[in-house]
Length: 202
Image 1: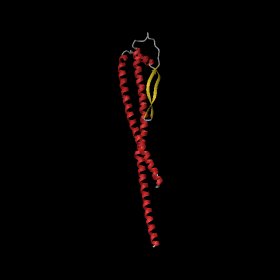
Image 2: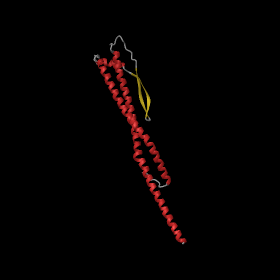
Image 3: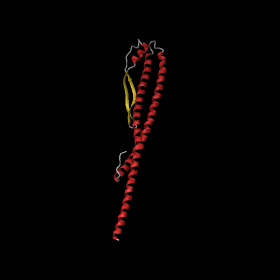
């Protein structure tokens, strides 16, 4: 703790600082709560996304039985190429995070007469899984950014609650005691001087 000046100006400064810290603390605490809620929501969205992927994989199992070989699986994979990932930005408690919008897949041509009838459905099923995984990665990115901001906000809350506010209160107490002692001492000196003056006159 830095040594504080024992003056009325320093006392006013400490009182002003205390008011400022006490005014900002509730805002920081609210932000901390909002970030914690958003982190839980991100985890919920990730869980739901994983459930949807499991459902998509279950539906894909029907097609997997049709893939006679790894060559068929490779053929499907070759037809699923991501061209563009669309996101926008969302502001959550002062943090800009990416938000998933959509995935655009390349339109890879193939011969409808040469390929099996189930190929379109299999490609769509694989695309759905790829889309879910991309969405999940973006939600994880949101979570990481919110977690970083929560760490910084928590540090600030702790700084205000455990350091700055108690420090200001202690400084105000010390300066108040010192100034009170000085006032008492000044009154005592004044009385002594007055008494000596009366004795000199008498």
